[in-house]
Picture (cartoon, rainbow, N blue to C red):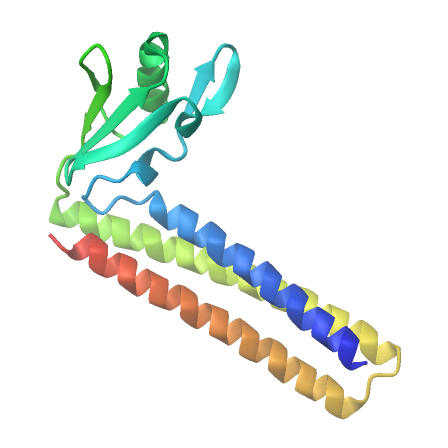
Length: 187
């Protein structure tokens, strides 16, 4: 029975780890006033008829804390890349110099910073909902083991371990949010 319990714990850890990864990706989309190539991570480009991530058709770098540069591998793609960035609705207005795009990242107002913190907290709540769903799935698997002869003590220990794992992942997400909040609120 302990092998089945360990399998349930591993499954829960794996599910929660992927939920944390998704949360980190969502947080990377929330800009903190500093230019970052991750800001353009969701931009898709029409590359000869097929939607392609921007990182697969150009180099994306930061020139300084307020400027992102996009250097296409093919100069003919410059207009398509510009169109893709504008269509991504990120609030950026790329400027072309004929060979690359320069994207100026404007500084954030105090009100906008508070809105971004609220958005990050909403994402954290969505992540915690994911943890609760994962916990429910693990508890359901545990209950199915009870039908197969799992003792009452092992059942209680399993429930406690599942709750401890869920709590540890929740704490990790809260720490990530605290770091992001400091990053957003730092001028």
